[in-house]
Length: 283
Ligand SMILES: Nc1ncnc2c1ncn2[C@@H]1O[C@H](COP(=O)(O)OP(=O)(O)O)[C@@H](O)[C@H]1O
Ligand SMILES: [Mg+2]
Image 1 (cartoon, rainbow, N blue to C red):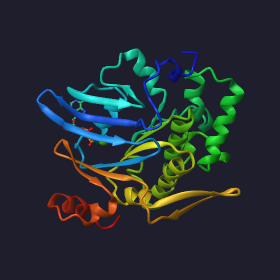
Image 2: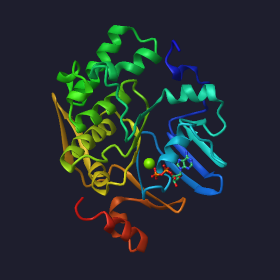
Image 3: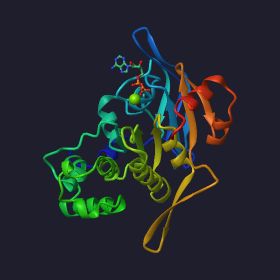
């Protein structure tokens, strides 16, 4: 591939109001094991959806459907105005070029430096000249606060730093949509917060649209109630009363709850209370 993948997609009929992701009555099963039943939701451009759900609820499947790695049995999936559920494989490759992914098992190349890892996709999948790749790599490493670590190997970094490198790699190609699949699992709360801060910065300073899949209640509420602002040459993270994300809870194949974090915490629903209680304390 010698041009940026996204330029190969035929233009969709989109305007300023076209959401980044739309699920319309999406159903999906593995043989007779129904994973999703008539799931519908919308993610506006610039927005963030937090997707909660117990292990096995179907969270990762939703992300894989967005990427076109699986096709739904019925229903419609739109990404940036494009029909993904019926999209030919060739176009899916192009579509994925505009989506960044941060998965739980971060597959960094151990033999490459941090900078080479971050620039890998830019070098392999785009026609960007080498000096511009280097520039972008520097920029994103600076953004995540690892500007001094470009020459290190991933094995020389802490677990939290490696997750941040994975985020830098996902954002290097300036995707419009970022998918985070349990990005803080296995990290202690303090380190997890450094990863959460990067996600907040991407949303508030880079206007990246995202889906944040997690079963860590603490991280979800942290991201929803914090904001990033840029002062002259500093980036500040502070709390905000206006929630910056929409919460969804996936349960029994359906979006069981959708709304604000405040409403979720106040819910009298038995399942939701148990879901929250089981993970409390500590956050
Ligand atoms: N490749 C697969 N083949 C068969 N079943 C699968 C496959 N991937 C996931 N599943 C099943 O689909 C359900 C949803 O999986 P997943 O989306 O990975 O859950 P989670 O919410 O933990 O991310 C689970 O019951 C899981 O066992
Ligand atoms: Mg999963």
